[in-house]
Amino acid sequence: MTDKKKLHVAAFSGGKDSTAMVLAMAVNNYPLDVLLITPTGDELPGMVAHWELISGLVGLPLTVPDGPTLRDVIDSQSALPNFRMRFCTRMIKIVPAIAWVTRKTVEGSAVVMHVGLRADEAERKGIIDAKIETRFPLRELGMGLPEVQAFLRDRRISIPARTDCARCYHQRIGEWWDLWRNHPEIWADAESDEKRIGNTYRSPGRDTWPVPLEGLRRSFESGRVPRGARLNLELFDGADDQAICRVCSMCPRAPPTRVRRPPLEAPRSPLSRFPNPADRRGRQC
Ligand code: SF4
Image 1 (cartoon, helix red, strand yellow):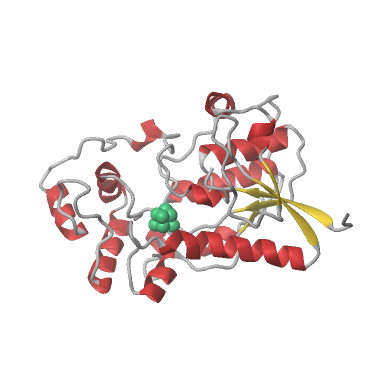
Image 2: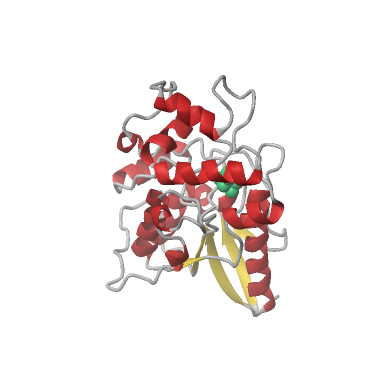
């Protein structure tokens, strides 16, 4: 038995499952002390706005463990992440999250991790130490994919079309096109990464388009539009099913309608170190 104070932590990626989990916890009066996110600094503005919206709705500030940005790990590894070298997830998300939980435990808290695995997903193990108590609110509430979608729809909560890094190597050609068309400043920065590091974010053989971003841009500029490109991103809000960084929810895998309103004074956001990408050239990854 322990007399440690329990610290209830939600692993909040901002995808549909962890978003539904956090809101369902509020609706169902689950204890919740911490909204833990692990930003990479390369999220699109809509993702940051979504984190802040949910933070306001549940009345908890966002907690960001000390850790590097995507730019930091690219520089420290002198490499761009790709399918064979996926160091980014481990260095930006997993290691800082485990260090944060470990520190809270050493400081005397009994951390209870709340992870957004759904009722219809196969059992998976968490990445946090097995000694850390872990709960799965969506499973406890019997929420599979249809229930999660209905829960968010009923509350008019939409999930950003992209929850992964803007320049994630894993994205499909249509998503690169979206980035080129809608975020030219990020595109230009990613292109300069490739020249500086001497590598590419793209994966040869994954599609028939030019591999380096410079060549890809020239193809887009010539008028070629890949199948699957989203000509109107707003129409596709909520399409995060292909998000790859589900480790953001600390574990690579509802109910009544009352949602608490935002507090009168919005919590101070720790995301101030992640301003609009357009304003952070030079430090953004
Ligand atoms: S979204 Fe992609 S680039 Fe970003 S941390 Fe995850 S795997 Fe790495």
